Image (cartoon, rainbow, N blue to C red):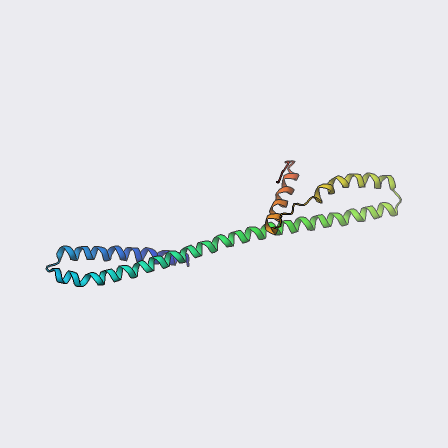
Length: 160
């Protein structure tokens, strides 16, 4: 669609140029001023029509370009949201594993090991509970994913 509209635009502009060249040639070769005066409205009308085609084609191309940009942004937003959902699933899985481990240690009455285990995981979950919320789901997902990546790489991330 975009290529088709671009071709129409180029062809229309070329037709305008050819029409102007024909009109200029008719001016130079005209034998009488009356025949030249009769052809001026015809050439003007054709040039105006071709200008409308140019304007129409430019509008169509711009509309298509905006749709392309919007689609890219939506795909990026979807990707970020999917990444956040994957992060939540991973955290949920970790919670379930920790709860099962705690339950097993309680059942086996391994209280000192349980205390060490709880102290070890409490540091890990202190950071997880600090999700960034900004009111925009796509931006929230993006910031939390970037925060998670930064934490895994040992990079301090500050968001205001």
